[in-house]
Image 1: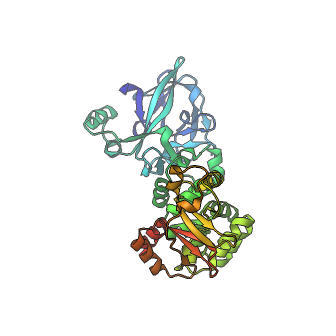
Image 2 (image 1 turned 135 degrees about the vertical axis):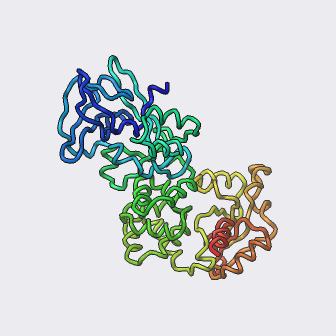
Image 3 (image 1 turned 120 degrees about the vertical axis):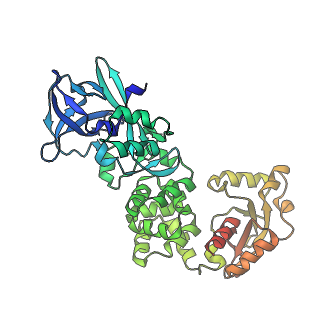
Amino acid sequence: MAERLLYLTELVGLKVRDRRGRTIGRIRDAALVPLIDPSRVDRFLVGGGWAWLTIRHEHVDTISLDGLRLREEILTPYHEDEYTLRVVRDLLDQQIIDAQGRKVVRVTDITFEIRSVGQRDELYILEVDIGLRSVFRRLFQGVLPPRWIRKLQAPIRPNSIPWQFCNIVEPDPQRRLRLNITNELLEKMHPADLADIVEALGPEEREAIIASIDSEVAAEALSEVEPEIQTSILEALEPEKAAEIVEEMAPDEAADLLGVLEEEKTEQIFEQMETEPKAEVRELLEFAEDTAGGLMDTRFVALHESATVADAFAALRGNEELLETLNTLFLIDGEERLAGAVPLGRLFVASSSTPLKALAAPTTISVPVSERQEQIVELFDKYNLLTLPVVDDEGKLEGVITADDIISVLRER
């Protein structure tokens, strides 16, 4: 298998020979056309300066460490093509995302596989190399013969990423489209892992990633990113895309984010938002950041105090998007005043006809929207709370503060 591998450090400078074995040039770069094939080298670039020539893959006979031999001596002038991904120019020494390892890495070499197709050879990208072994090859490239380098590198543990798990970072949306770059692998990541990747990239690259992934995924990842980076990304996005992301965020998180943007940018985003989420976020922006109103989330499940367990399960089925974080149901009276709180776990040990009021906690602790942050933190600590309801001056339920909100407050300190 080893002799059917070829490294980029070996490919660059490789002699190109005609059918008679005469040297006609050396390879300086190779290019893929991802829309046609995501891993096959489509053409080889020979020469340099003002004399770049192109050899298409179907004109190649054999590929080895001894050189690239042509079956048809057809070399055409090279013309810049936005549909091609050049290996040396666009990949070598560039940052890419390792979607399998969930990190940003820098490419130091590339491993190709030589495959026999009929009676000729073709070259396919197999792996991107990032470890010491690839650094070793770079150091001795052109200094020692390739076969010597292969023997000397043997004791060094390889470190590479399969090509199918590499995500290229390309800020230009038009070029992303032409190069068929998708973010499917990124969208399957945990938001915290994706946030780490975003933070490791430069400003232009991180904005490109957020702008090109699904808005719901972007919202989840952005919620995990450091506040100053959140702000810079949102400010750089087009208002329409920014609005789509903000709409997918929890209202309290969206309000926190929009609250630190320039007023003009915030209004541009509001103009693109749907009426309901916009109204929720605008309402939260009226509260000071360090008060209960500024901390609370307006998404909760509340039922009339006469409701039963059956009614509760019906309400939960209608709020599936909240189930991951929901731990308490709230009871309200006919005037929408807070009347009780029911821990979610108690629903599963009661019959469907049981009144929720019978399952409610004996004491319901709540705070007014104007309560200060310090007092709220003390209440969570004193009573080991997971959820704290927030009420207005008339006792009407306005929102909910969760333990996650308090953890965020403590982290910022």
